[in-house]
Length: 261
Image (cartoon, rainbow, N blue to C red; front, side, top):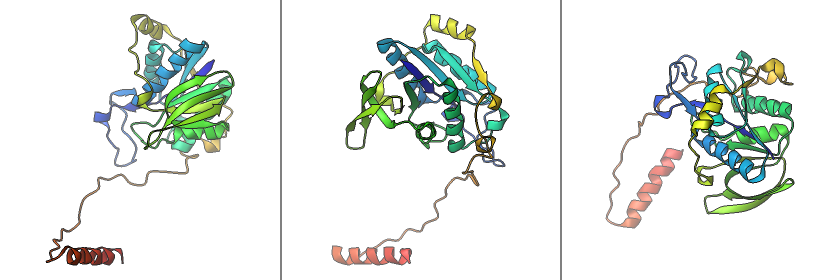
């Protein structure tokens, strides 16, 4: 079974800062980690390999320092790692990011399952995984909490919902975004750390991908951050009194309707 895991290197949550001029995250000099939700995707990919054989390839798009995240994934037990890095990708929104990752996966060509964390801790959009599946035109299931069964043709999974979970059957190749309830990520072994230190990381630029330059980076991003600010509460407090609950309710409704005018 050929498994691809898409991960992202993000700033440590406690160190997130915004550049007020560019409205982008300040990454220089900030400790970076693998997106916490992606750790569960890595673990699930390794478990699928252990149960069914095959290979796990981890892929990320980011600056050169994102290589450290790939080496951490190798230390956990993945087989190959690919870094997609190019100034042409700078400023990518979720659409351009998912398009670029899909182009890289197209280049890999041979895959059965793509795994992603349900969302990234720095953006919280949960759009990149579904976007990859859309660009590749393959079926997807989001918020997967358990892979019940899987073979070369189809998989049965449990998809977490607010009320419980749905059982979904899906044809391969497919993409899953996973939630933290799916497993407990392992710690890298000493042998894994030694392997990761010596591992050759494949590096691709925009020239290595069969991608439309107009869909990459800031140029290919239909959404842009215009302003970042901390909301401030400016509302007034009003005390509503009355002799009877009906009178208080009528006064409350009247004030709410006035605010909606």
